[in-house]
Image 1 (cartoon, rainbow, N blue to C red):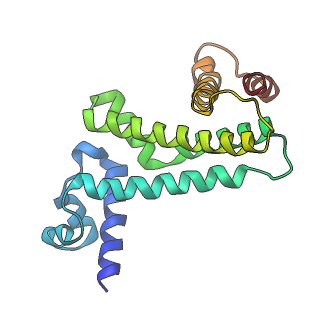
Image 2 (cartoon, rainbow, N blue to C red):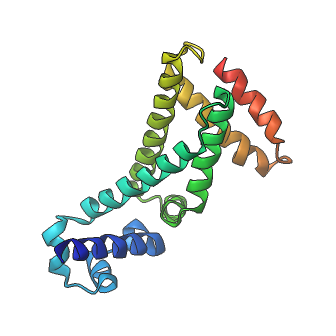
Length: 185
C-alpha cells in the first residue's frame, strides 16, 4: 500500500513536470494529481528536487535501455555507435519530460533546468564513454581518450542531425555514418 502511494506520487510528479515544467510544478500540484495530501509526499521525498531526481534517474535508465537495445553484437563498432546515437536522440525528442525541460530552458532559462539538462548530457556522455571503453578493451576502436571521443561523437552527431538541418538539406544517413566512422578511427 505504501509503495503504491509512492509510485502514484512519482507518476503524478512525472506528469506534472512533463506538462508544466520544473519551475511551475509544486508539491501541491503533484499532490492533487496523485490524489494524496501534500504532507504524504514529504513522507517519501524531502523536496521537489529530490522527487525530480528520482524521476530523472528513471528517465535516464529508460534512455540507457533504449540505447542498449539499439546495439547489435555482430555489427561494426561505427554502426553500433550510430544506432545508439539514433536511439538516444529519438528518446530525447519523444520523451515529454525532456521536451518540456528543453522548452523551459530556452524560454525561461531556469537555472535549475539548465543544470538538469547539463546532468542529462553528462549521463549520456558517460554512457557513450562506457560503450567506447568496452570496445577499446576488445581492441576494436581507436585508442583515443574515451571521454573526449564520446564528447566529439555526440556533439558532432547532434550538430549534423539538428543544427545542420536548420540551414541545409538533411544529410543522408550514409554521410553521417562516414563522418562518425572517421572520428572513431
